[in-house]
Length: 130
Image (cartoon, rainbow, N blue to C red):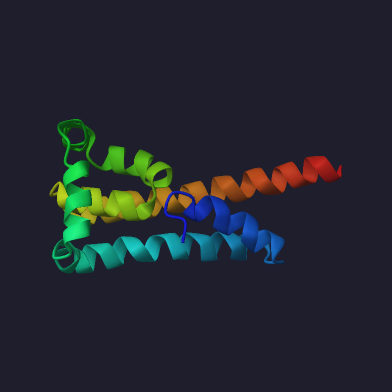
């Protein structure tokens, strides 16, 4: 479990394990999308844990709140692959973002980044192998 490197590690590992690029991309994306929906469904239960609640308090900083208020789904779209799906899911829920725009933006973001990462790796390998 590497929350900040989820998809960046899953795709190369999948390719190195012998999966074809489409399978590696699909499984990595699936593994990154599932937590989004789990956090959405279980957010209230997560808040009951003191450690999680303290961590969420750090995310509630005014700057983060302003960015999400101002840019909404676009901020989620850009930040999900950079901050990790767990972090963005919890931050968006904690700051009161509606589930549908958050889930759509995050899901599309993960899929696009997965495809871009796989394309970059396969192109790089093709260039190296000549």
